[in-house]
Image (spheres, rainbow, N blue to C red):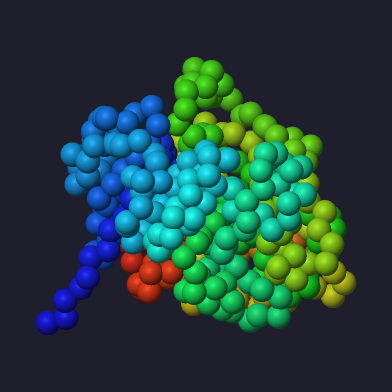
Amino acid sequence: MVMRMTLTAAVAGASGYAGGEVLRLLAGHPDIEVTTVTAASSAGLRLGDLQPQIPALADLVIGETTPEALVGHDLVVLALPHGHSAQVGDALADSGDHAVIADCAADHRLNAQQDWEDYYGGAFAAPWTYGMPELLHAGEEVARTQRAALTATTRIAVPGCNVTAVTLALQPAVAAHLVDTSLICATLAVGYSGAGRSPKPHLLASQALGDLAPYAVGGTHRHIPEIVQNLRITGADEVGLTFTPVLVPTSRGILATVVAPLRPGVDQGVVDRAYGVYEGETLIDVTGPGTWPRTAPLTGSGRALVHASVDERAGTLVALCALDNLGKGTAAAAVQSANLALGLPEYTAVPTIGVAP
């Protein structure tokens, strides 16, 4: 009999939506035991009082988020607000701790300091290894480079949820040079959990139900430079992106519709062959003609559905991606990437079956 060694994990920001979803997945991980949970205002409470959907971890007491509380684990997941995350992660790194750290905030995603200053402000943190194993690099026929980087790192920057949806929708076409990347238009329907758990007037059910609410319009959304960064890695020379997110009255899910002009001579057959790059990807399914991606079948899972159609009259590619913003958009990506960094099978504890209705 082969004995399996159990690794330990700490989750900071355990009271929030992202932290709770990470804990839900790790609670079912055969090789990882969650031993520490921390948060800010909820310190001292039982985890079960805030995350009752995870009975296996209900008796853990939430501690304060300090480097001292997080040190000494094999895996640390940071589900903290932007800005604060870098302080905690860098303090852990400076302490000499050898844990794999997966940061679900934006602090370590961007390579360019100017992008950070333009969209976030505050101190710029050095970029960490990007936690999207399926990210294509220019010239690749399959996603190898990012997976190789993740297996050799202990510092992971988990992608933004909207970023993942747009990147997965369009990157096969960009990698195959099928579209003009200077004129990309992305419109996203986004569930309210993407705005976090902190109470805000515009997130109340009385305000949200029956309403469709755009936000961060006109090139102001913080995920724009991250999407541009990914598409450049995939092979785009110039990227012009119009990005419009719209809050829709559902708790979870993102449906991204991404439109870009086609290059001459590109037809549906060429597009279909380009999207064949996803064959063999466990978490990405490309839907066939007339079958459009939907968010509901993906709820609670780490999967994404992608579709690409040629609009012959407009001369454009219409690429769609649906995913659960807390699943493949955040927690599942964190666990998937952490598995690679820890030397575990990539999809361990990453759910592929959704919840319906």
